[in-house]
Structure formats: C-alpha cells, structure tokens
Image (cartoon, rainbow, N blue to C red):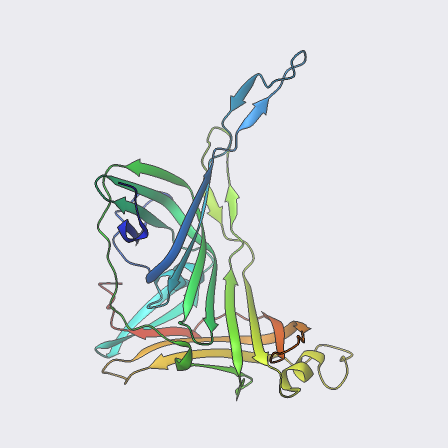
Length: 317
C-alpha cells in the first residue's frame, strides 16, 4: 500500500558528537504541514574525443537539502537557526526559553519516516538550518519554514513512530507588530527571516561535505498592510522626500501571546533592532483594498531579544 501524509513521522535530535554522527531522532518540530527532502548525486558525464555519446557517468558530490514547514508550537527549530537557548522555570508550569546568537550552530539528525504495511525510515545527518522564516497571515496560524542542509543520509527498514505535540498554537489574532514602539495597524502578512548563509565545504577524497560553515548572518522582514496613512511610507523615505542620508532606523517587534502566565502562557517574542526599509510597493487593482508592501533589513542581532513560553522543560526540550 502506498504511503500517505498520515503515515509520515518527522523527528529530530541534537547531534553531540562529530559533525554528521547519527543520534536517534526523537523530538517533534511542531505541527508539520509539509516536508520536502531533495538529494543529488551530481553526476558528471565523461566525454571522449571520437564519440558523440558520453563514455561514462561519474558520481560527484552528494548533496542533500530540505524544507520543513510547520505550524509554530515551540522554538526547537528556532534554536538551531539562531544558535543557543537557555531555559528558566521561574513561572512554572510555563517555561521561558531565551535564544541567543552563536557563531557555530548545532547540527541535528532528522527522520522523514513512512510507516504502512512496510516502513521506510529516511534519515539525514549533519543537518543545519540555513534559513528560518517565521510567518503570519491574517486568518491563519503562526508558521515557520526551515531550509536545511544535510551532510549524509540513510535508508532504513524501520521508522520511529510519529510524535505530535499537543501544545497550543498561536493564531494571527494573538499577534501584534510594532515599529519603534508604535503598533503597525491592519497588517495582512508578516515574515521574519534569519539566513545563516551556510557554506557547504567539501574536500578531496570524499563525496560528502565535511562541514557546513556559517557564513554572514542576515535578518530580513516583509510586511504587507492596508494602505490608510503615510506612516510606514514616510519611514521608508526618511520624511516627505527621499532623505539625503540614512532614514531613521527603528526596532521591529513581533509579539504573539495567549493564555495566563504561570498557568497556560504561550508566547513568541522577536525584537530586531536597527531596521531600515529596503523597498516599498503600492499595487492598486480594481475592486479591492489597496495594500502597501515593504521589505525590511535588520542590522542588529537578536541576542536576548527572542524568547518563547511553553511547558517544555529543559529535560524534554
């Protein structure tokens, strides 16, 4: 019988040994909406003078990348994207998780398992988060999309059973977006992205990458809002006209929260400092509301400015 989405189990666990050394994937990543793993043998056709057809095919560098999109419940993937996480139980049963930048990111083992009349346990080792996007859309749930890079993989006849978290999600109505301390009104969509610009580094004598080196770290945002005043557009220009220098930079804060602290508090808080508008667009179409779309670049890091609340202890993280 063919596999269905309901037969799929997506789990991860932090690797503690040498890069790419397997550990048993055992932790969920949120409510998975889709996952795509792509692998390439990077075949090289070897041609020869005297023949139109290739003489041989040679396997080149093994390449494995993937994309995981989930409804956000906790910050496990966020920790792999930002760097480190510290846990505080001062408001139990609610646990505070504070994230901080790190120059060297942890790797994890990933299972993309399928179980039916037979089982296929596709596993990937040496996984790192190259890019993570936190996204909101009116009428929807807070989501996250992780783009990952892996060192190697295995094809097993056993798949670990699925683990689906029961943690409360964060709907769009639980969110507030602020720029420079002022609420941004009538937001249609918002995206916050951290890009680690990983550099897959190979070596002579090996088909697998030997290390995924952290490149320059970038923070970008995209926001679309109903056009009713000139506040954001003025911030983009730096006034009524394009400024002669840099416009004033502001902090962008995304705060999603619900519940009661020390009872059932759930929260994601992200503050990115020194943000400037990169571009502005105002498309007008017949029969609809006019929106303005902005691309934003953050110049400062997030150390101490990103945290979540849930009921995951450090032992179960």
